[in-house]
Image 1: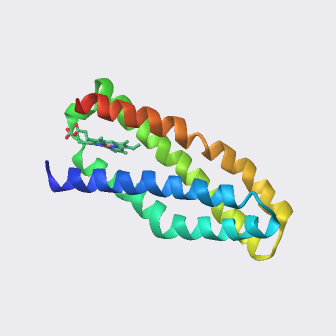
Image 2: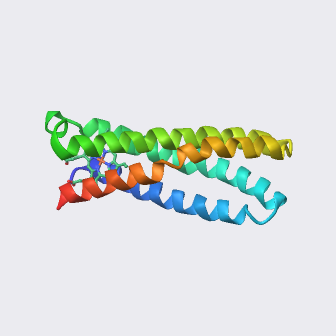
Amino acid sequence: MSLILIIHLIALGIWIGVVGAEAAIEFDGMNDDESYIRASKLHYITDIWVEIPAFTTVLASGMLMVNESHLSGVFLYKIIFALLAIMFNLICVYAVFKRRKCAISSDLVGMKSAETVMKVGGLIIPTFLVAFVLAFYLAW
Ligand code: HEM
């Protein structure tokens, strides 16, 4: 297994892990307004320090490995769904940044409006799962 593939897979594992951690943060934020504001700030920090570096590494390492043989058949679908997952993750990041800006000034109405954008970003889950299943189907 090449070093770049190892990096791809480690970054993938970190990405999955942080999405799980962020789901836990969001659940905790449902308790009351104060925890909602705290969750918004925490989610922002995990995005900056873990999630963005993780999916950027998955993308960069994946791009470095791509050759002509990957651009047809099932592998091409894996790449398309992986790119969609990254795009929806970017939409989530945008919503998290917007929500955090409102959280700093305790603007709960503004925070709630960012949730609508975040729902669109929620499409990361199905697109990621399709890419994941296709990738492991190909590996076996
Ligand atoms: C949802 C995101 C992704 C998942 C779940 C994922 C999963 C995987 C897995 C499990 C492997 C190992 C497969 C094997 O050893 O046969 C792999 C390899 C690879 N991935 Fe990804 N990946 C993702 C994103 C990407 C992206 C965005 C690209 C390209 C832009 C990419 C390109 C590649 C390439 C070229 C390989 C090497 C295949 C080979 O060794 O021939 N991946 N990926």
